Image 1 (cartoon, rainbow, N blue to C red):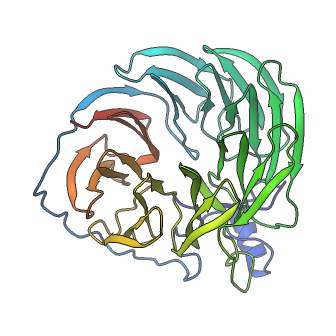
Image 2 (image 1 turned 30 degrees about the horizontal axis):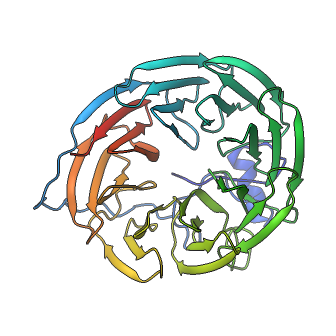
Length: 392
């Protein structure tokens, strides 16, 4: 995904104006070459090499496919028992039965969306480009509230509340039933933010949010800070080089939560103590995958690294998918699953990174994180294709 940048509280400006401001050191162009923030944009990117032969293939047949509108925002699929919930750029929100793809309900929120959907299985929440928070129940609008800020991260629906992380790094809580505002906190002092999906999630009775390069643990009752840990140490001579916002999603592993800092590091934090467990310097713009054994992510050139989850020791690295514009991976059984810009899914062995399977979609590019439920993985393409595979 090509990263975009914003000044908190501002609207996106025309590229010509942004370039003028960039030359004065005040703001960065709206779009830059992904993965080359520090080095500058290359006009001719290297072409990917041939794909390796598969020596020990696995089977993952296509179980069902569906269609939703095109995806033009940081995608998140909400996963709840028996249900996948997906949203598209045109404001369509769709709930599907996970095993069959049967449509459970479909709704339109009457406006284009800026972020994906969050859901607890009963309520679903989205944010429009007009900065309205909309909450649905079984496809019916329950309430709608103006936020006055841009949102690039899907809302979190949990504990009878809706939590929203704004592009200005503010965090807001609302009652899920009636939309009553409960609290609003903001971390100040950051002149530039990354217009990409950040981190918002839960650990037991604690709300976890990405605020710049830091992971903050907040009380869901009043927004007070329980702990705050730096995932990376921003470095550089200007605001762009120092930008190290957390990139979602984070992944919980027992008492640890692992997350990626934009172009800086992959780290795991003990969520009980609020202490850094391990951190590895790694460039890259997309999220990571993790389970009890392994943490995996790709860098800006699509070189894949895998670390032992408990220690951060390197388990393996792979250059077999270089320059294929990989997205955020997911763990599925004994495999790590990456989607690429050509719409291909790559199932890699967790043991050594070797390719176990390749599966095609519609060619428009996989967006967001593959959504896993049991042995099923659902991927969404840029044109709105939904493809569910079951690993056998």
